[in-house]
Image 1 (cartoon, one colour):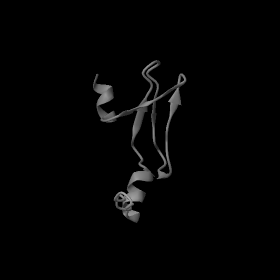
Image 2 (image 1 turned 90 degrees about the horizontal axis):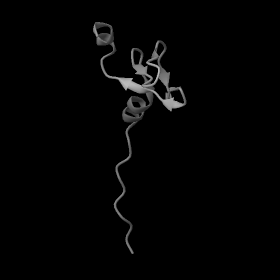
Image 3 (image 1 turned 30 degrees about the vertical axis):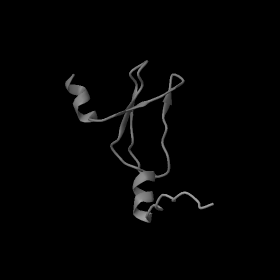
Image 4 (image 1 turned 45 degrees about the vertical axis):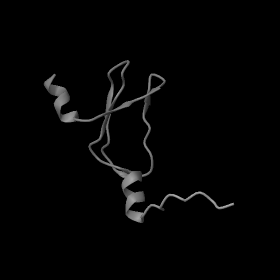
Length: 67
């Protein structure tokens, strides 16, 4: 039997983009409204937890103060 087609491998640039933690990203807790912002970037994963639940990425953190 033939093997199913394999998805293409990621390029090094795609890996870096996918695994880079960017300065300025903000996360908010839906329960207590706590916010955190990335102030030091790097390579890896970031899964912030608050009140026992994953925090949600804030798409436009600069507009939060306007509300």
